[in-house]
Length: 76
Image (tube, rainbow, N blue to C red; front, side, top):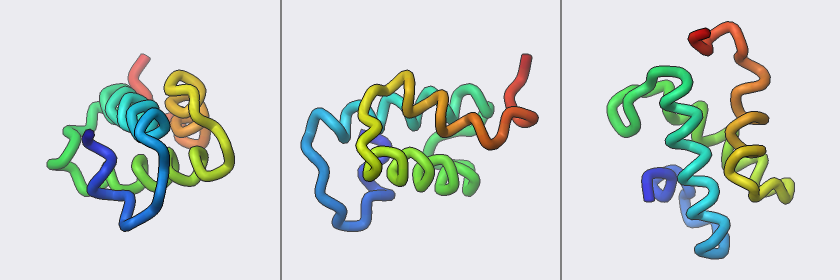
């Protein structure tokens, strides 16, 4: 799962990691970032992880909330 390299020994249930990974990939796609190749993906991953730590586990909500602070970067 793409987000696991950013977790740094943080414990999440497998289902939550799957949701986080889906949200991470979707957010990176929306920002036209290449997962694993663009350094900006760390910022996206950190935001997804932060939201998941607060109890947000739905992939769509995670993606939406991750992108909310940076709407000017999203292509129409």
